[in-house]
Length: 224
Length: 175
Image (cartoon, rainbow over all chains, first blue to last red; front, side, top):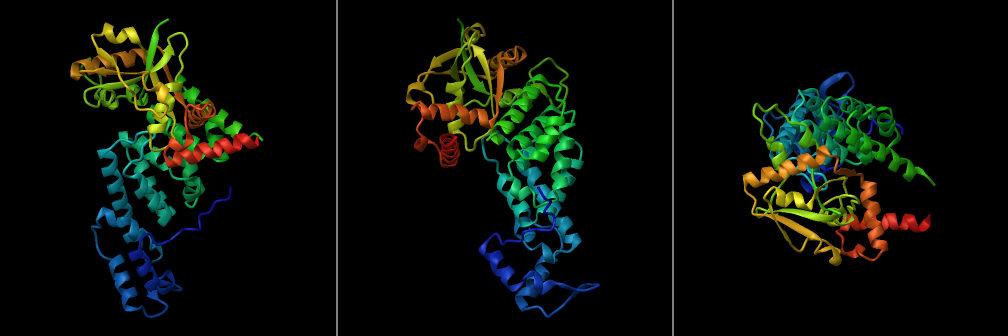
C-alpha cells in the first residue's frame, strides 16, 4: 500500500462550489516562484471575490468549513488554521450532543467524511490536534467516526498518520479508546492496521477475545 | 434449564466511569446505555443459561440498525427480573423474521429506581461474563445463515445491508 500524500482532492462539494472553482481554479492563484502572495496572472472579478472570501477574517461559521476546505490551494496557513479550528469546534459540538452508537449514523459522520474528501491532510492535521489534547470521553467516539471513513479516503492523508493514530490508541490506558482502535482495525482490515493489532497485547479479556476474532475474520477473508 | 433474554449494550460504558463517583451508586453512563422507550426495555429470547443462542437477537438488532457494525450483547436469566421486582410482559418484537416476533419481552413500568435494578442485573451479568461482542463478519454470518434457511428475506433488509448480504452470498456461491 503506497502512501498517497500528494493527492489532495479538491473536488467541489456543491453546485455553488463548482461555480466558484470554475472561476477561481487553483491555476488562477498559482503563486509566482519565490514570491509568496503574488499571482502569475490577473484574476477575474469572481476569482478575486473568491480569494477575498477565503482570506476573510475569523470567525468562520462551522457549517462553512467544508466548502472552504474544497479550495485548499488558495488558502493561507492562517486561514487553514482557522478552518481546522472551525472543524474541531463543529466535531466537538456534535460529539457532545450525541454519543457515537455502533450501527447508527452520527451527525458528524458526513462532515468528517467531507473534510477528508476535500483536503485529507488538513482533516488529518485537525484530528491530530484533537487527539493530542487531553483524553476525554469524546476521544473514543472521534476514533470510531474516523474508523468509519473508507480506507481509500483516509489513505489520501499521510498513511503514517493513521498508523500512528491506531498505534497510540491501542496503547491507551482507556478501555474505550482501545476498543475504538480495534473496531477501526476491523473496519479498515488492511495489512498495516492488522499488523498493529497482531502486535498488541490486550489485557482486558473480553476485548482480547474481540481482537482475536477480528484477526481471525481477516485471515478468513484472505483465504482463497 | 433457565431461559435467558439478551439485550444490546456498550460494555465500555459499564466498565469505564469517566469520573470516580464518591457515592456507591450506579454511574450515570451505565443508566444512559439502557435507553428506555415508553418506560420499557426490550429483550430477545436467547436460549438457556446452559446453551445461549443469540441468533434471534442478532437478526432483529442487525437488521434494524442503519449500518452493519459489531454487536455487543449481554443476557440475563428470566427469573432474575422477577427477583428484582421488575415487571416483564411478552410482546411482539420488531424483527424481519415473523416466527421470531413472539420471542421477545419488554421489561415495563420502569422508573429510575427500577431502571437502576436493571442496571444492577446487567452489571452482574457482565461480571459473570454473560456477554459476547460479535464482529461484523460474525453478524453477517448469522444473517447469511438465516437467509439460507429462508427465515430472512434479503429484499426485506435495508439497502446497504442488502448489498452486504448479496456480496457475501455471491462470494459463498463462488467458493
